[in-house]
Amino acid sequence: MEDSGDDHGAFMEKFILLPPPSSDQQQQQLPLHGLTFAIKDIFDVAGRVTGFGTPDWARTHAPAAATAPAVLAALAAGATGVGKTVMDEMAYSINGENAHYGTPANPCAPGRVPGGSSSGSAVAVAASLADFALGTDTGGSVRVPAAYCGIFGLRPSHGLVSVENVVPMAQMFDTVGWFARDLPTLSRVTDVMLPPVPAAADDDAEIPRRPSRVIIPADCFKILGSVDDHTYEILNASAAKIFGSDAVVDNGNLGDFVSSNVPSIGKFMTDLSAVEASSSCVPSLSAISRVMRVLQRSEFKANHAEWVNTVKPNLGPGIRERVQEAIASEDDSAMDDLHAVRTEFKSALAALLK
Image: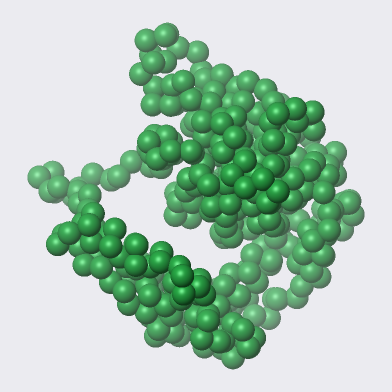
């Protein structure tokens, strides 16, 4: 890792990746022309070792043969890459701490963790070291550091953006996302990264741009636990102001919806802790979260158990125990039930959101 200097400890290494050659006139017409971006050290860049947040991974892997499509898309759109950023080891944390490379300094809240696992990418943007940055989000690793660092972060729907040449954490949930300090930049990057909206079946039909219903489930906001938190009221008022009579604001109970529409979730609700089953939580969503964590752990084990058992990497505290637990887990007997919950949950949400 290079001397951090005044880079807030965000970067593993700094380098310049230029857009493909073109005329000045062509470059100026590209959607991300003039913008710089940082790259989480989970994305392959041809000719460079992808470190996956831990020195032993970097030591035991050869330089990448190809560059991740998400990085290539940013370059093709005119952006310039400025380096690889620090991440939590093996992407198995949302704290943003790294025992080997240091914890990137949170510019928004000095002395506080930046959130992870895309910690360096979020800090690079928050500290104005890059205009935007690429990260990945399996269980919060774009959303959490964006929130902690006071910037915008987007985790698009799973599967919309290619994860080719991205080191997998758990493919069932791994999602490429991005950070920006302002919404216009976030929008420009999103227009490049997401596939275009498909054409309407009827050439004369107008593709709807505004929702007919905005779902702001009241029960989810009760989890915040503070009587002084007014997020729920603010969102309701904002939705009404933005969409007016064009959209219905639905404050339905999401927990009840899940309980009614995900039949297989029942067997996982019987094992909830007292806290998870309490009125301060939403029991059916606590069960969904538990299913997600077990599926994630199972895929992580399938991806990395052989490497961990062979190399016996020197992992930092917290990460070491989490990885060991995943490698030692025996969840095979419950896999059919876990996948049933996931399938039912996806179908239920698709029906809810249309």
